[in-house]
Amino acid sequence: MALFNRRKKGQQYEHLAEKYLSARGLTPISSNFQRKCGEIDLIMRDKQSIVFIEVKYRNNKNFGNAAEMVTYRKSQRIIKTAHLWLLQNNLSPYSADYRFDVVAIHQNGDEVEWIKNAITQD
Image 1 (tube, helix red, strand yellow):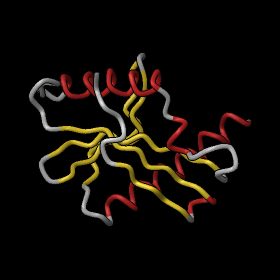
Image 2 (cartoon, rainbow, N blue to C red; image 1 turned 90 degrees about the vertical axis):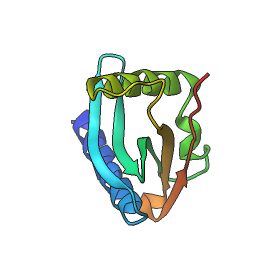
Image 3 (cartoon, rainbow, N blue to C red; image 1 turned 60 degrees about the vertical axis):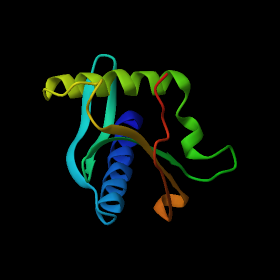
């Protein structure tokens, strides 16, 4: 039951992030793209760029910012999953125009922080 509630809450915040970004000009492409190596919460278009978005939520900042929850290991999984999405859509990870953003949500959705290019590739 707790896993269901956590997943439901996650979907609510992903929807909030999608609405937030749509209001700022991004166009939704897909959500919850899953492969064995990982999951991408949202995939959107910002003009000509494809944007892979990780949504993180924290009730408060007492134990750190939500964006800090995106660890190096998590970043690597997101990058690998994004490359699979690009290949599946006949785009090259080496020449396509894309980036990785994080949307950090706090205070039950009252505070939203959009961090562009939050994840970089080595």
